[in-house]
Image 1 (cartoon, helix red, strand yellow):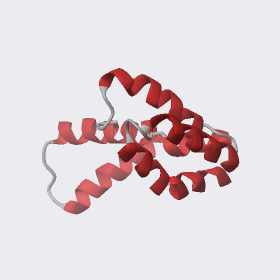
Image 2 (tube, helix red, strand yellow; image 1 turned 60 degrees about the horizontal axis):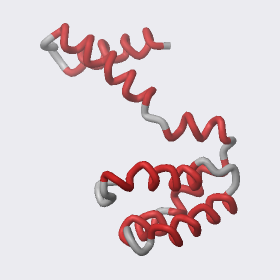
Image 3 (tube, helix red, strand yellow; image 1 turned 180 degrees about the vertical axis):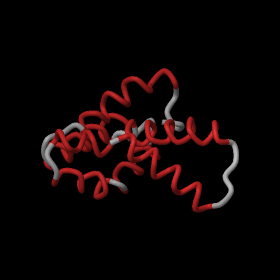
Length: 112
């Protein structure tokens, strides 16, 4: 979105959601065609990037929609990193790498 002007971002994001929220590959391809027709004149670099990476995007369609949503979000990763930071910040220093690994393992066990 760095290459898209601020006034167009909302509409570009809305049009991209048609692609990555599609339920089938053919719906996503149709969404990409519509996106290209609408935005290729103004943002050809963005369109090229989506066309180039489309195979990577379509690899998610082999999973059910509910699972795709979990795969693409970073909330779980951010949550784990937050817990690790909180514990490690309180410890300040570790006597060894093995001690650090034990603390991290303890945090992971505590999460689940």
